Image (tube, rainbow, N blue to C red):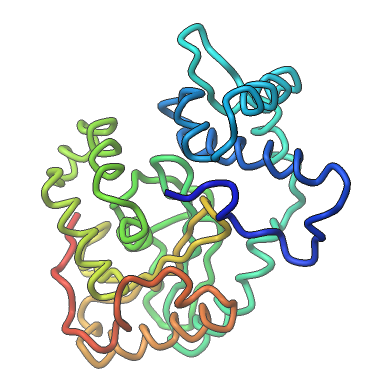
Length: 281
């Protein structure tokens, strides 16, 4: 279990800056609340995870509640407050995340000729934040910018499963059981998809959103809690093993250039293993 002492300092910041310790403690608690934005979290769990004493954690959380960054309900469960949500809505367009990824996505789209998607996790959902369309005659436009789907659907959504532990995946499935059932995805299959991604370092999907459309995706972490995925949509008819290898190399190369490949890998390179089981709709 990570405690506050285990969490890395922000680069370029002096540990001795006056007042910085309290700020970092408050931010650590805010991240802990954000991690369970849907279910809420008790003070005792935040104390265990942060390593703070109960009194300090309670005082900092009370301040965050007073400032509107955290809500505390009648069951003493903490969730993100309106101010935390509003800060994200004030980000300029294009968002810094898109600015960071767009050049590499353009390169992939130009070389591959296929469509590249930037998918970002939002709670139990995955959202398309950006896409770049390649020059192939047949355009893969299965996902619009701003569109959301439940995790584990679509190539990027499947890739993200590899960064989520089985217990959390189970909770997500039960919260959206009707949606998953309608898509023909029982819990056992969702867990199997996650294990395949962890084993092979990528997600391969075939006919998951539209018949005749396949994809490859690789997930990455941004900071401690945020996570996203880059994926490429292509035609199933031209997505054999050699093509899978080629597109996997393109994705891995761009993620390495961004410093995002290899930080949290529990899997080998996608090109050193046979293709994982197919993920359907």
